[in-house]
Image 1: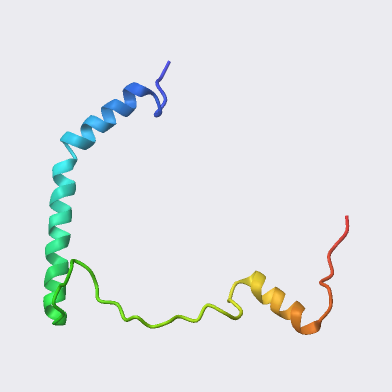
Image 2: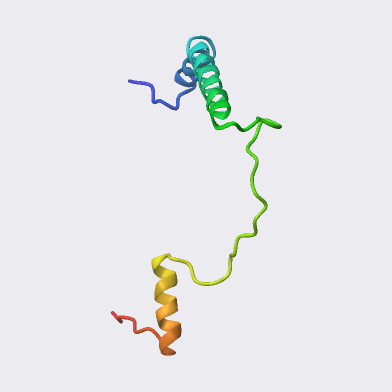
Length: 89
């Protein structure tokens, strides 16, 4: 019978491949992306500080109605002042 993909032998084999064979490709990719981001930062004229982006400390309003369908439904229900009709089975 075949081993499932969750069997110990399959998991061990995948972890060995991940550590030995694929790690160098993943490392090369992260280095390549890091260099690309550094070049992009230089083009934008923003100095890289503390390894992160400089965010404005603006307050974001979190009160009021949201844009989800359920919130729109509640808003309409609230305006009418009536209970929403439901189907009975």
